[in-house]
View (cartoon, rainbow, N blue to C red):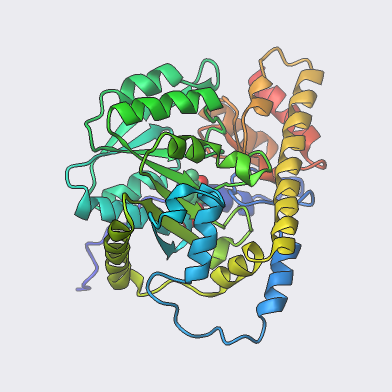
Length: 399
Ligand code: PLP
């Protein structure tokens, strides 16, 4: 008898299932719209030139040592400036506790564990829908979740009224998970005015904002504009938490490079909070990986490289924005009677197309076009070479 005979097989991750179906398909013109990673116009993964340059600069350096538990200090300092602004008061006043994390997922996991220990009884409010891993992360930390309305299928836009209504029922001290920009999976972000309303309500209700920022720069192409929601909350005097990831905006996916930060009320509090972040990290993984942090430090710490990075992020965002426009134009040119305006109104890597699970299945079976069953199109998979065929297939299954 095996020790593991009673271990059931865990359900498959929905995204991995799509990749498998795509790989198993033999049509030469098959299209994978499931991947949450950037691809160029030839459907190829991209290493940014600025990352290549940074790699050449750190080559041969003494960089095989362990990092401290909290990671590379210079990396953390540069990261929080990117999120909160070069001149942010909270940084100047020593009110930011930060540790390097295992990318965005790791930041969220540290926050969940921090909540379990130091924000007892607080629920995590998660938008509906969200990146599916959010549910798993807070569940594993034993934190109770509550759901707030976010997306309105009728308009394929934000349900601001539902959102405010749900958050106004939260208990003081609860934590609200907000996608800082380029909401995954809907591509729907609040406007500047709507963010202001959310911030005002949360201040009034004493709710703690936790920003998951997995796509800074990837939404509009402008890193400062993409941090606008966070800046609004800072201006309103919130203490807040932030998860940063360099997976998408620097293409460091596999390097697991991120930063987890919490804004405190004083430099003294920062010392305590940061020490507890490290106390959580130590038994989990001892210390974070080095290579990606060195690359980011090199890039953000050098004015010329940083400028080059800004331009390359903008290049990726612009390609996606162009594909949105082309996809919509093609559908309209085919005479589709359906509204497709949301394709260009949504932002970031994903388009929540609004098609049904049955239509998604037909796209896979009849057209070898693969996406998640919620109708989410990864715009990174759309290119000038496949956008015509995609539009025709979408038109066929929706009429
Ligand atoms: N948060 C959101 C909203 C995401 O979409 C993702 C990635 O898809 C992540 C966090 C985590 O990504 P990573 O752990 O690779 O930084």
